[in-house]
Image (cartoon, rainbow, N blue to C red; front, side, top):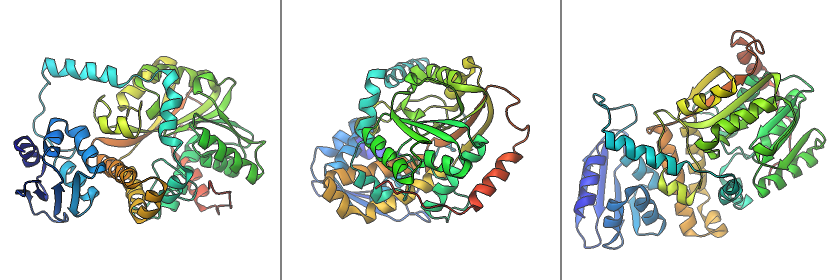
Length: 418
């Protein structure tokens, strides 16, 4: 208990946390803070506090999943916000160079963490994306966009923000009818179908998920556009041909730093001389790091969130020119808040699909992700690349004009993923 006492005393700053231990002892941490409701938790056994203290990164999540850490006042999002919000990414005093041993330890941990061999890629993707279709339908928007939305107004609905995200991306691609587009990591096909619908382009979407492939192909067939929007189960490294445009949304997080140069080299080889590429990825606002051990074990095995420096450095040898870089600082926090609220509202259905432990795992995952974007070191990056510096207009005005036109256009009916 002593170790956990020390951890909580340091972590809980703005807000109140009450902890009831299995022996009946009650401890209180923090102090009242505006906008933060008090949180109370209880440990179901004597061993759990020690397990958490010895390995907080994985111990807390497992204890909550297993019902050994019970939130009695507030919910798990309130708890995670209380812990993580006490020391936001932006705060800190004078920065000093890290100790040599700490730099060395971080480098070794990073190398181990970032391994994502090709033979593991399909298994890693299946772990997360081949879950029941019913699960994703319960918390995503109707088009099943499982990536950061784009909020022109924080009060927007999730459906509107996801539609605006697709318009935002399409505008940066500077599309023209008849062009060929490669969608790397196409999900359930929503973006590919959208690009064809609004710009008359032919799209090849690739995925490593059997479930996503099945749904995407069905949607294209039902929309009557299967001859223009095709989907294949193939690794990006095995694609051949030339494409006028390349887009990748929410896939780069699964590539792994050892393969970044391979990824960009392949993209350059696939991109037409006057082509445009748009990479949309979760990113770190600081330098390179390591994947949270709980997330790696339960949610995204093989996943790694890149720093901007890692992305740009890896693309430079391929002579891809970074024509535009945008940091979406708060959009994913707003997105995940919608996902979290929908998950909580559909608790009974999720537990019927899986069980109560899975429901708690999913809530913990979303709570951790939300707060990482809200006060931690994560954001989203959109990087636009070209091979030829003259491939696009010399100012960004064309993006705003195209985006306004796309957002104003009525949205045609398309087959839903379910």
